[in-house]
Length: 154
Image (tube, rainbow, N blue to C red):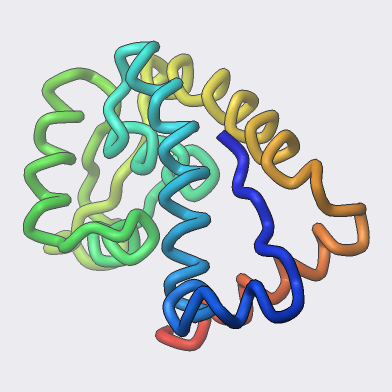
């Protein structure tokens, strides 16, 4: 399902505040686009949290739970349970941090890599399809703007 852009002019204004509100538009776009991709994950038997964790860790091996929590958008207490489950499934390993043994770093196992690599390719394809309504310059600007907005909370 693609997001249809609103028409311009009086018809757009007549739809009211929420229809033109930035946060609603961002949430709506995220809901639609994430839903499409999440459905393909479910079809393959992969849980959304598994995807998020593996996608973050495969490019950032050795992350600590606090940083991973920020990246995957889950509270640390919830993520702790998720990581424990993923360790049991053989997707992730934990190791004591070399500089501070009280801290734990996280790594993707070979099994996890085997699951996430094809999913990354699918995610890239989904992104391409989703952004097909924009030209190359608009895509680059759009992603740069989203990155700027996302850093406001850092």
